[in-house]
Picture 1 (spheres, rainbow, N blue to C red):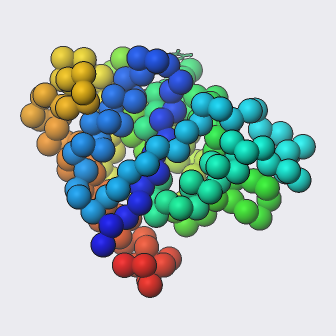
Picture 2 (picture 1 turned 135 degrees about the vertical axis):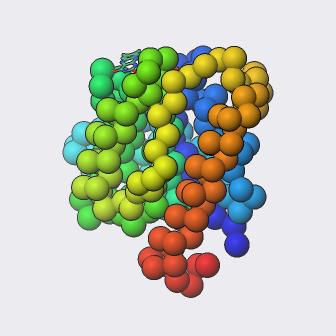
Amino acid sequence: MAYRIGYLVGSLASGSINRRLATALVGLAPPELEFHEIAIRDLPLYSPDHDADYPPSARTLKEAIAASDGILFVSPEYNRSIPGALKNAIDWGSRPWGTNSFARKPTGIVGASIGPIGTAVMQSSMRSVLSFLNAPQLNSPEVYIQFRPEHYADDGTVTDERTAEFLRHYMAEYAAFVQRVLSVTAPGHI
Ligand code: FNR
């Protein structure tokens, strides 16, 4: 059985290390996971004024989440929290009231920093947000990456075997978690 995983990259930077990490994770994931990126770049800032008539980019976001069996967040930490562009995307997906797109979606949170904290504080913030949105989260293993460019090739391949093994293990655990959650929330699906 294949599972469709939508992933959101929390950085808009052209040389984003989190985009490289996302590419690496996709490459190391077990074959039962199929990935598609859920783009956040073109979303306007959320306002409840849009609830009566969502703009096309926000409709596309909600449709992409609805079409996903699981959601993977790969994000930097900005000022010890969630980058504004990613939080804005989550706010769009959570509304209009009563149509929260994240409810019951199995989620994973991963992040890379240039510093040693490895996005731990951002991930803690994300866990509060996703709990409020009733999104089950893979609690363990946790992935706090201090990004070392020498461990990655330009095409996203992980050249450091210990890092590759760790990320491969995470994706295997995430796949098993998605299957576990769906066996409860969508038993006809598996
Ligand atoms: C950062 N950075 C950062 N790093 C960190 O470990 N904790 C933090 O709180 C912050 N805060 C922060 C704020 C802002 C506005 C920027 C631009 C950067 C540094 C961050 O880890 C580094 O820029 C990464 O390269 C960001 O990831 P992407 O964009 O390359 O994927």
